[in-house]
Image: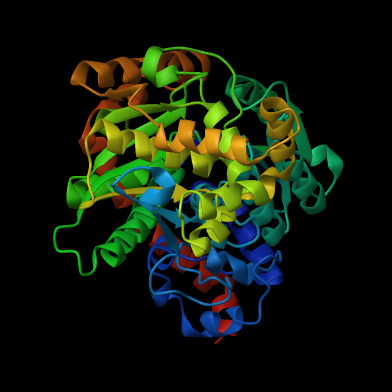
Length: 500
């Protein structure tokens, strides 16, 4: 189970000691999972120093900003995570669609840096990753590898991004500025749908003992950090938007599956409020819906496989969204003609329209899916549907250009704006929405066998145990064990004591 990140004991004492000395020299203190869950518990000495640290710099203190509670400046704390409620004038749905803002995370302006930390920290404190000798390999379709490279830079080690060659130009521009050398960007064939090719590249890299692969699709630290931290953050968001609305109900949590880290927040929200959990995928590659295949451009959600850390037996629905919708809505939200149409013709509050740049492609995918779910379950004004704006439009400027050329003949005007809103917002229907039966869940669960047991070498026992909710609930015991090890590690490095 070492490759799945489940250890709670020291595996290699020599690695542990070398890492301690390295972190001591680099001035690195590791935040606990508890501190990222509730940043108010971050030590006062660290909180004071954070004020003067650039949130986009590779500074060790920025590890203590890897949480949902950064304010709009990203230098201070907000009592509630940043979130936006989308008005019915925009969505065409009477349900309350609310998105938590991933753009407030440090360095990469996307919440995937939280997943990267959740996978890395347990490996560090158990003596499985040596920053003085190992390279950290970050397989991804975009933001996770950026988060991993950012954290690797902080730790003073080599971080290698593995991602499809057809991802947005902006992602590669960012990576080129952060990696140690050009060879630390590994471009795999294909696009968003080609996750198998990423696995193959990582298998080749893994043959070198100097490389440690942090595979977000099967590292349980990814699941756990989102269940604990993203789940708690979304609970606070719901409380804020339910104030003064005694009939408000948390009806659902909607998330593109991706690596299945973010959707783990649904396990927390379902346990606390009975919220439905809806998994989202591209209809061009309907793996969960129809055991299908294909290719699409909803960057950041992955597909053609079921991640090992996806608790599919706890899911309630699957929603398919077309990349035609996400590409054209990205254009609507990020052009002058599109914003003008929304304000003048649809009556959307200009402040909300100005904020639409907070939504990248996968964020828009979550929005469309939330609307489709609300329509399918006849949700109304007392029903809150929570989802996540995984990143902003900053990484997709080149995709707006491509979409304008592909769908609108290089001209996006008021007519195109009206057609886009009418088709994909007001016209979001109930197609490609499946309410899951127990048999459906078993079908999806069994599909994962071919990736993880036959291709990736996970034992049948380790694969099968995931069918029980008790397994996933039992993972919660890892957090206090890891936090105790993080606290011990920080005490032994002595860096935290120097900051007082």
